[in-house]
Image (cartoon, rainbow, N blue to C red; front, top):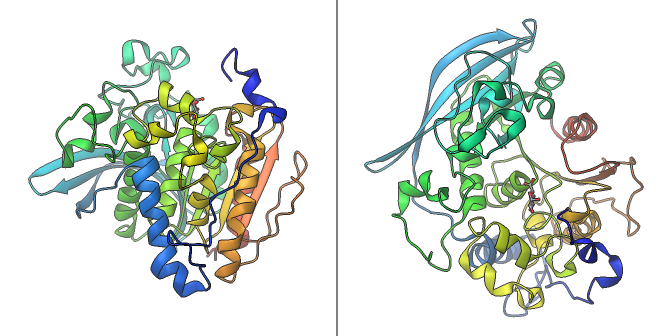
Length: 408
Ligand code: GCU
């Protein structure tokens, strides 16, 4: 939370609001059954979220191929670590993104894989000395030695605690990750230097519906999946898209658009992710648009301080994961991300799951801290502590995945 923001983290300041109705189309007609959902409401919601929040995802098809750059046995032989260069081609244009894939050595069959972006580069996920540093812009993070927006060797392994690869491979999962900045650098001056250039030239101000960084990150997650489809050691029908915080927003948007993802996980994704915007609790639309003007489409700014006019809210984003298992996680001290708003959005998405024949077991009363709800198609927990992704969070995701996916 930023200083001076306490006012916005007070439940008594939450305005009265009504959520836009999930199971009613733009003409006011009720969405009665699965056919109405698939043929009418679902595409309508994707399109509304594009027009008002994330911007339009290019529909042009691209070609994705992966070439192996390095392969090593790591974690005392428990995992194969592969560095793969993804080449994304659109007509004459080409963009390359290095991607890290871990596979358990013990399992001979294709494995389910967690797919998520990282904030600061592949070299921060592992201490492996040969992992290349990002060439382009990175956030300045003093503890990673990333001054002047350049990655440095001292960042090696600096975020490995967020990536418990050892546990995940021993539980039978693969893990795939790429640096978010290789799809769109997270900066207003640089975000058009990634995949943007595959489709558009720079344009300022942007067209009202042009995509922002969250849209490009989400698109990037789908391109990693394009590659995983080609990888025989991976059971791509069981890929789990996940993300923390801003990258949780991207994971939800990727899961909403790309039905190939078998499961969707949002860790502390907050405003523009799982949290209801109309609550104006913690981070608001105005605040996020001011601080991160490159994340969403230009039209989203029209709803700064007037959330009630927005034709969508974030429960609709969550509902687009239906009928696939969805997990939303909050942290008790992460008020900036509005834990209660994240929970209420998950509850409000449940009617879409019910329509598609899935059971959701979330009660009106929010679960207590440290009491995850793992059964039912929408999982939720609130853990103690602040914004972050911890071993506790991961153990719930593993349990949820084991419960809902068919593991070999
Ligand atoms: C900021 C931002 C959030 C975001 C978070 C993060 O706090 O306001 O919207 O989720 O950064 O990505 O860590």
